[in-house]
Image (cartoon, rainbow, N blue to C red; front, side, top):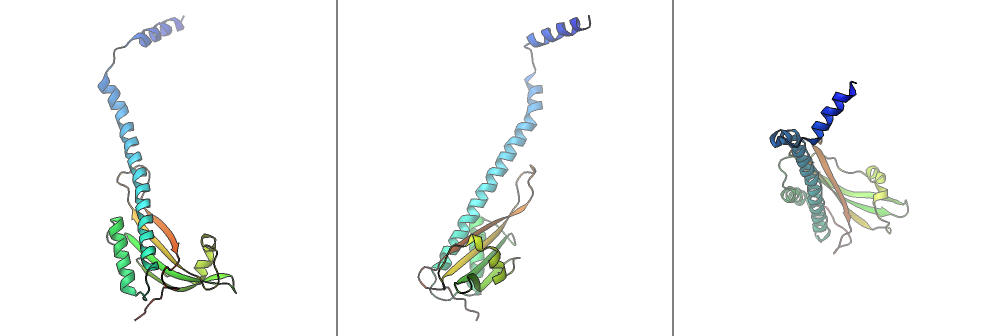
Length: 185
């Protein structure tokens, strides 16, 4: 007995094609805007990561082509180049350049020199041992230039993703000289 009026109401409701588009739009619009903002942010994160990685490659390639010793001014200007290429400002970008050499007798990589600009610390030989699985096989005396960058990413929209550092890493062999020397003077 009680189901008959309910069934009658449901039949009438399902056949009713009148509606209010503005009400439906107000219900759906916030979800659509959130989906758009989330898509924008996640696309932008991958875009910025790609830009940071390319800037890292540029700096590594630039250093690998040096035949004269580089100095602190060179590293500072490399960080300025990183800021320019990634369009970051102030202390949002950090750079660490390290030259390591493979010692076949001890089967490990040793730091020849390391310089940083920003909040990071210089890389030590013990730190390189933790990243040995990310380094290529080498002959005794081979040197690598490790370039590491950190770029602070702050999302445009609040969609559940807070600010974080985009960290990039690359290694390059010296191209025109057997080593890249650092001039401390």
